[in-house]
Image (cartoon, rainbow, N blue to C red; front, top):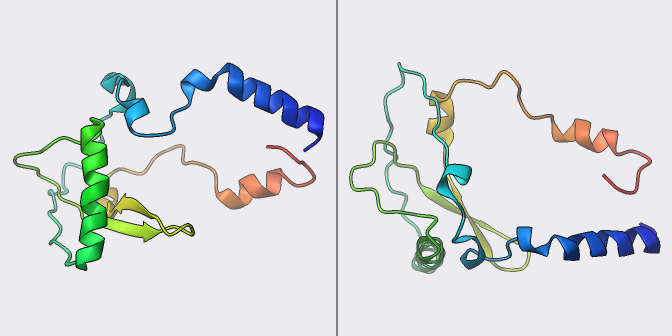
Length: 134
């Protein structure tokens, strides 16, 4: 990236800095209609409740911390009688932190396939050949 391109990109990011969020607390004012959606499910698929996975105590603490952060920011809510239950999976990052993911494989099997799937990463990478920016 040339210095001029980098300068223009930094100026663009500064101009629109109010649309970027850097923490859960920054996102607490999002309109739920904009970020919430319902999944279509195949009528023949019954809800599945995954059995609780046993985790090490130190992993359980990390999960608890992450859930509390997201709950306090308004991203999560308590569900009294959920029909679908999926386990939390922690994925370690290179910097020593963890990313909280959810095992949605059962839910994915019950969802109809999209007629317009996302492009494969291989195609996207190939399309960037000989370019410095994408």
